[in-house]
Structure formats: C-alpha cells, structure tokens
Length: 244
Image (cartoon, rainbow, N blue to C red; front, side, top):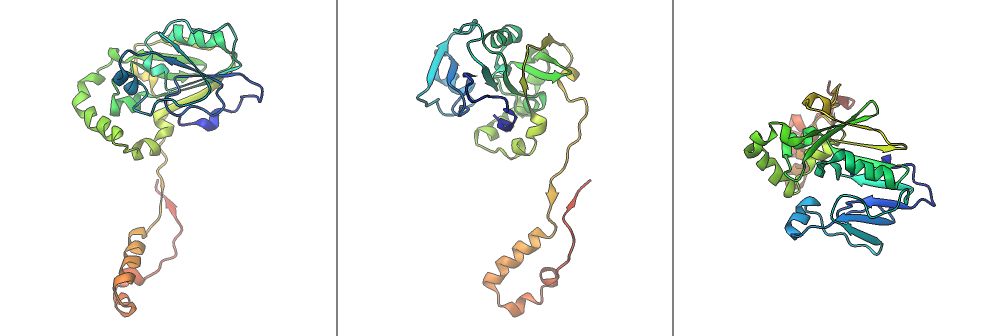
C-alpha cells in the first residue's frame, strides 16, 4: 500500500476486512481474505514476492467467486493492489459492495505496467468522475515490449525502488468509497491515463557535490592545500531552487 494516509474513515468499533494483504497487512484489519493457489511459486508472484502473511488474526481462504461472508458483515474493507489481478472486475467489486458499507481501494496505473509489465497484472484501471474504468491488458500492445520490460521487472525484484518512490503519485491511485460506484469496461488506453499530467521535479541542492568533495579532502589533505581549491572554498549564498 502506497497511500495508507488516505485511509481516514475507519471508526474505532468498525469490523474491518482486508483482501489480499500480502506480507504487510494493515494494522487495523480484523479479518483477512486470501485466495488459495495450488503452487507456492504462483502465490509468491501474486503477492509480489513479499513474505507470507504472519498474523494471529483470522485468515479466510477461498477459491475465487463469491466471498464467504454475509451481506454487510463488515463496516470497512481494504482492497489494495488486488484489482489489477482480477479479470471480472464488476463481479469482484460487486462482492466488495455486498459485504461492506465503505472501504478503500488502491491499484497501479498503466504507467507502472508500461515500465514493469508484471505478468500477474491482468487489468488496467482508472477512476474518473465517480466511475471506475477498466481495460483488460490483453487488449493492449504492452506484451510487444516484454523484452524491454524484463530489465525493469528484474530491477524491481532486486529492490531498486527509487523510480517507484519518486513517481508514486503518478504510478498509483487510491481512494475511499462510501457507496457503490459505477464500473465500466473501456477499449481506449486514453481512458486509463491521467487527463492532465504535471510532474513536479524534486528540489535540487546546488553545490552538493562540491561540499561532499570538500569534506572528503579535509580528511586527507592539510587545510593549507584546501585554500588552493577555489571551487571548494568559495561559498555562495543561493537559495535552494526548484527547477521549472
């Protein structure tokens, strides 16, 4: 889960279900719903190679389809990074709406799969104007880039997360819901993209490299030698700027 701060509406007495928590469940969840897999390697890939769930709380396993719960059994349901693994989005969300009165949903956007193209991800999603639009990934040409995606996918498995952390606002989407919303299948990639894109670059500290070099040289050279390095000894009072 990339936006836990968006989960704001769980009341102290709410009975909370979390679907597919992977190895990092939300601390407020009371019950976990997990799908059973015959092969542990498949299960590991489905949970993005995170550790198995370890908890003293109740875990309910099922084979897909109808959730093994009563209508409105829960006050809140968390469904984070599960929908992209589902083909029948409408039926799955129908079950979520059936068993709970409110909840939180989070999923990766098409930009994330354009780079990493995770094979376990079957569906591309985007919420827009009160409606969740979804596009089966098989209807796109992303598979043509599999040889390119493979490098980035392996980098992700090797825990190179800097790109994901830097662009998580653009790569993922999450929101709370308080009543069932409309769901619609689309055939257009543009429907699962941001309408307006504005990337704010990070703040850059100028002369950071020079300061680091000076610190290193101080350890190995006498102070008199440092005075000869004008580029290191010169101090400029400039505010930190944001590149435009």
